[in-house]
Length: 381
Image (cartoon, rainbow, N blue to C red; front, side, top):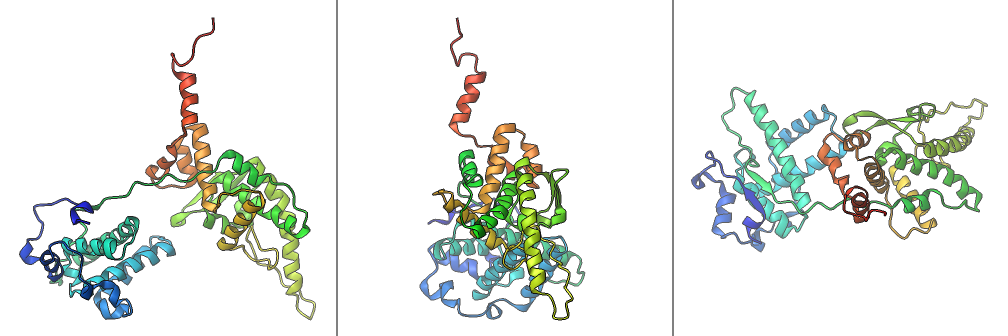
């Protein structure tokens, strides 16, 4: 694959000359844009540790950057992904003796080629790496500007590059009939499984009713749900709080579940009672708990319960919790057409993230056409 087919480069007047490119870029030019030879295959060095490749100054700078992001309420998942991306990039530079402070666009270019052609990762993964690299260098440059005695001029190698994106797939959305099949499945004969279904139905009704993420559902406490006001307080990404409405069906399901939760909590307290007769007070505040252990239900447990309940309802499609959120957004948007309202309910920071749900099926378009176009249907005589 030619490099020109992978990257779009925007050249500026301040682009570094070829004479000042570091060793890695010169290697790339000498190779005439051919893939790296096997004797320099990055995969051959995977057994070596990060410390052998990444200089201590880079590791220290990465940790300072991540520490600053922690103060900005970035999630642990995002921080972990950024750390992995920067360590991977640092290893690559170290393998070819390129100082991270002297990294140039052609070094980044060759890194991208290596990731796509040799490591054979998806474009979206490389875009995540580039995003991390860009943000890191922005931090490093600002940090350097505050240091008066710095003798090295750091440049951001990501400036002027844009990786072509693969077409973004539309989210999979469940039909309303499938949602009904899941949430209104017949009662179970087994008493224990019947009790668990009361809890599971409350979880899935709430997810679909309010468009909750899996992590948001798992982290809910009893105090977060206001059954009278029919609302739920949600702590979303970036620790942003939002309040979203809860539908009548979900309220009914939660009301049916709460007595079971109380019973399961009582069982846990009885099991942990001390010999002297003193019963410890339960401190579990979670809304959805395990019947067996009386503890907060984990995200993985919720995933498994949804898959089991879908199979039990005769749904052939593989279901995962985010499908319920997708379905909530798509069904609400197709009925209301209010993109801004859906954005607020989902907790999206940017409207562009919500716009992916603006797709409609051909049947819906046909109905709109038949109702609104003056020549769509013959007038009755």
